[in-house]
Image (cartoon, rainbow, N blue to C red):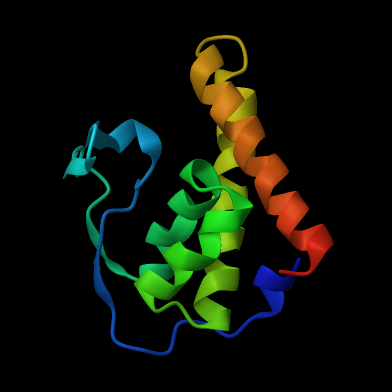
Length: 120
């Protein structure tokens, strides 16, 4: 996967949520209202928090999210790799115990693979 071949984060480490997923986002009808669950809070590569792009955004809207986050090509690849990694770990762990989380993991895997096949 391209994520393994991309350059490492070379900038300053920043505060990251560490588990920025739909289960940790609260929405109102007009948009995002809160981010919760800061157990994964750390200082590190901001690409970690890009994983939400493949979980909640369609392919058509991911580019808008990428632009809003000012993610360069390397950060985007690392974020995509992180999204795939998390989903691949979660799927076997939750397949029988948490069907919603398992379905979300399958969705992320599908989105990442679709992006990979399309070359985006």
